[in-house]
Length: 233
Image (cartoon, rainbow, N blue to C red):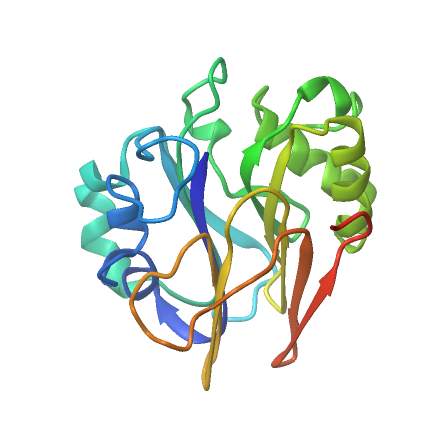
């Protein structure tokens, strides 16, 4: 239902991560190569990043328009640089609003979160303070409500309550990058200067590896762990 990307490492510009790669989020907004649900991602885009000055507060730029139409972002993306980024292009779930507040990344405390997938809102916390009524925003708020350290447990419990859910999550807080695979694709590129996690590779670098379904990826202090989620098969 969308394509997303997370980066943790040495500072890179948003253009380097989103616009410049031959198959980056810009191209994925109109011609994704691995998307299994939907044909394009024209229902909005967002980029969240942490200030290189050391401030713990994430900054966000979100829009309900297609990424390819945003010339203002294209003009400033080369000079917006960060060591930690979460970005996404959106294909809205049928019935969900098309508005900036329904577009990832969502914010909770010092965390940025993105959801690639779909989930029945009825199985999510009714107490979570979400930015929008869309399923992804409520799921992100539910994860924050339980604590992002409990991401694996929230995903497994949500999947048990909604067996049709697809629950690929990206979450970052400036020093840690987490991701889940549950029903959709995720690939990783671990280079000398950092780690990219993306719904699909943004170039043809042979170092990209595919993360198996129903796994948790944890990137912290230059180390990467990939572990099976409970209930995986």
